[in-house]
Length: 170
Length: 200
Image (cartoon, rainbow over all chains, first blue to last red; front, side, top):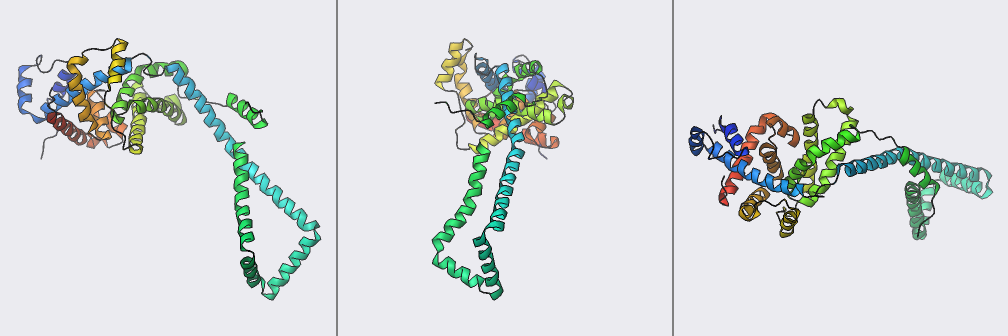
């Protein structure tokens, strides 16, 4: 089985991190590392990462390189408040949509109860259903007025979406 | 031109002012935590993503998500130490960095540009760029060829001095597999460094 760790790698790492590697370490450790693949890798990689870390630290130390903690706190507060308001607004939007739907149903019921042409239309539909001619007649109507039917179907789909967007954005 | 204020605008502004926002720590504690960790975290993010601009954005996002996640999940008592808070912050940052790299996979990994060097030099923090520039460039190129997860592991292990458990927590793997994963990442990096003639 391939060896994946060495008992001396922590010592090598510590020496690299403290900039003691390889000159200022125990000669036995240096001798061991010459023949240990793991310790050699640790020394090479830790040294390279330390070099990269110093470079990054220099960039991070540049004045104004990072936002001030007060500014980050303030922005976090504002964002959290905005999200809280949005979250609180979601049920209101749903209630507004439900109220709109109820109003439409109520309006339809009023028209249905009071309008004579609507009542005669309903009687005609009932008669058609009873005679079994409703579906063929409807198909014929769609074929003869296809564009109008498509426009009405689109209206049925588009109007609720438009109302939702208008209410949601307001 | 300014538009007229509507009733909704007014109610939204009132709600914004009165919205209850509770974070896991108060401003003073946050500022201390930020000042202790922001530079290290930025360095980590810039190395893992290979993009300093992205690291700037992810730094603030990580701190924000830390504040929100911690306050949603039980508050200050969830953390028993600063190290615990730090681990949580790094875990959030790692997830953000990996997600960001996935989204912008075609972006080249950033290395130091001439402008950056001048900016550091002008700031008075410049050290020995003349002697080390070539070595740093080789190290940057070697790191850029690693996968983000390997970069994250190596950085946490050798720049942050994190334990295997801490690294496993941050990158979301089992602690028991950390030794092998770290060994493989280190091997890859050593090979790349060897190809570029970089040695300790």
